[in-house]
Structures are given as structure tokens and as C-alpha cells.
Length: 180
Image (spheres, rainbow, N blue to C red):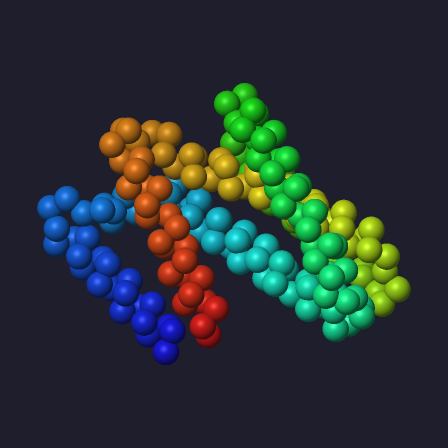
């Protein structure tokens, strides 16, 4: 049912955007390959990251026997890593090639997943906290440059439309994928 509602909403959105003289989001922006690729990258990165975030508390409670309070304390440092990395990336974004930032942002959660694959029932909370901080640190290098990357060659008037289009597309695709 959710898939049907998502698809109908997406079709209605595209039809409306094509039939109005000044749409909120110009769907012709999606002809730009950079916008499509970076939106797809963020979709894949977001799905992978948020699936791990959703599954980890369940694993800690059910498989490793952590009480709910301990799970909350163990999961709490992840946003600190994210905030730190976003502050660092904000300073470096004009000095470094965006591709290197995105690669490092994809590499940190991959390292976290590799570490998480070795979890066993006797794992200490430290080995849960530090990989999740690494995972949070991957958010900054990916979520900051990816929206800027495709917009660099566009005129300034197109930027607000791109910012409006990206989350709508990502959320629609995430709803479609998660409803299956």
C-alpha cells in the first residue's frame, strides 16, 4: 500500500511540475548526470548507514543482552562524530577535491561495518562506541560535498530547486524500497 501511495505521489508531482509554468522543482534539472549520480550516491549511502543505525540497538539488546539504558549510552556518541566531521569538512571543502572528501566519507562507514562484522557476545562497549563514532564521522564528508558537487556549473537561480528536489527524491525512493 505504501508503495502505491509513493508511486502515485511521485507521478502526481512530475505531472504537476511539467504542467506549471513556474514549478517549485524544475524536473528538467534531472537531465544533469551529476545531480542524478550524487543523488543516487546519497540514497545508497543513506540506506546503508540508516539500516545499520536501526539494527544496531536491536542487536545490542537482544543478542548481546544490553539493557535499554546502556544501549542509549552506547549509541549516543555517534552524533558527536558526525558534528565533528561536519565542522572539519566545512573548513576543508574549499581547499580539497570533493571526490577525496566523498571517498573518505564512504570509507569510514565501510571500516565501521568491517569492525562490526567481528562482533561476538563478549564484546566490550568500547568496541561498539568507537566504530559508531567512525560511522558518524562518515556523515560529514558525504553529506556536505554531495549536494554542492552537481550544482557547481549551474546558474545561481537553479540552486534552490536542486536543494528542494534532492530530499524529495531520496525520501520517495527510500519509501519505495523500504515498503517492499
